[in-house]
Length: 471
Image (cartoon, rainbow, N blue to C red; front, side, top):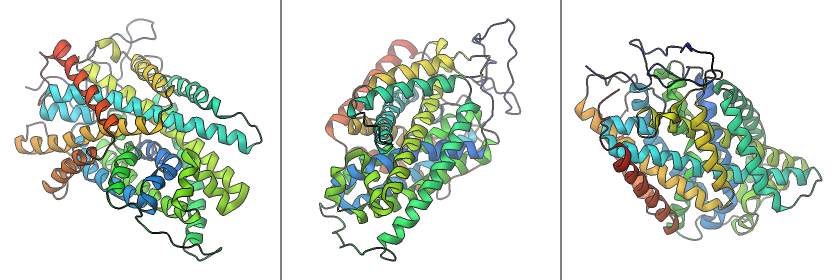
């Protein structure tokens, strides 16, 4: 007989509500403690789209154009293909195991405790690096927003503003997943409205249907290799679909909503990325665009729509980076929560606040390291280390699916099955691992160092735990 779920799911898969036995706002750690299912399809899409849309559209265009020229659009397209090859296997696994923790949970049950522990703990750090990257981007856009309003504060406030709002988002997530999801839904709806108007006008101008025609630029001026290295850099933009899986334990009707949220968010955002690079490189040459740096899109908005366009983009960038950071803090805490529930971290990390129904200790363990890394301000390094750690997880997710399909344990009964099996998961694994080879050596070294450290923690703290095949 299978062991009980570490999250206390009952026979029908419903999430029992915990009634406190004493008047306290901090949960005692029991097998019955469970996160509530409060997120629907719109909430899942908002987490996926909201996390991905920030960096890809508002932070990366200038950096990517400097590396690959107009072919940066192809870099984003490559990233979308890799993400889709992983999103499909992840969707099958998520409907079979709709638990908080996402990729960590799938890998630990499909491949065993050691790879699960390395991925789970690395996912914690990968999300920390990604969130810090989003917060630094937020700081740049916050300063630019003030500048567009006539308040010049200088670049010295970028990091302080990023730290202030990072702490604020952490506190917001402590007060309830539903509160964080409502903020996410509102931000994403407003953001998409801004982008549709901007990309619609900019696309018509770039196509020569309105405005003055521009001289065409060579598509790949630096060759094919920079297209791949740029794809490795910008892959951070596609981390949001996997973050949907980390809150699977809080989603209603996960068999339907998880695949739709993960695959749908990749498709929507991938199209927006490619359109954005097309519009941006049509407004300026790639060399000039790269000189604008992290806020290049503000100048693109100014080029097409004047001061109103610049303000719309700077405000959109502010919303997008807020959305990415907020969703990533939520997902980071759920990764910590899941690893702690399996006793790979001290069980105190999985305490649930009975007043708000959130893992407040895990949120603290997420917020602290995020603020430390945010203070470094190293945009490209933060992005690539986050991509490295996630690509390792994505490749192993695909391998875990193949292993589970081969063994087909009694409990494995997904509501969604990957079309084109085993080709799709095999390609997903190969593409994920291959993309790592195009990263900067510094990012690879930091990523490998984190994996070695997590493996050391496993042998020190959790080597006697066996999770393979258990729900």
